[in-house]
Length: 135
Image 1 (cartoon, rainbow, N blue to C red):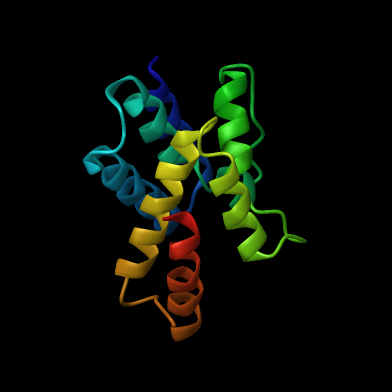
Image 2 (cartoon, one colour):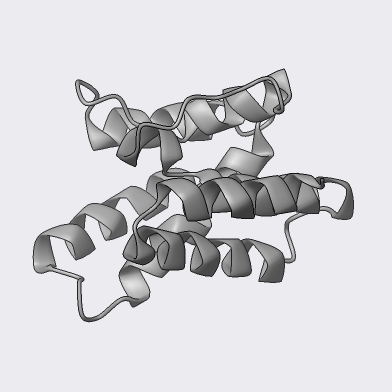
C-alpha cells in the first residue's frame, strides 16, 4: 500500500468526519503548492492527511512509517505546554530538514483561514500573526 493509501485508511479510522474533511482539504492544498518538489509530493500529501492524528486522536505511530515521516508528524504536533508562537518557530527552524512539515503547516493554516463558518476572530488573529514567522 502506498503512503497516501495508508494515510487515507488511517485517517478514516481515527478522525471524526469533520477532522477527516479538514485533513483532505489540507492535502489538496499541499498537492496544489508549487513549492512542493515532485520527490516529496507523496510524502507531503500523506503527512497532510495525518497531520492532526497525534494531537487530536489516540493514534500511535507504527512500524509502517519511516523515521523521517514520524519525525515530521511529531514536528507538526503541538505540545499542550508549548505556546503557539514557539510551535511555529520550531517548524520554521526545521524547514531545511523537514520541508514537508513546513508545507503542511502552511496548508493547514490556509484551510483554517478559509473556513468562514468556524473561523473566530481569535483564531484568525492567531493564524495571521503566525504567518509572517513562517514566511
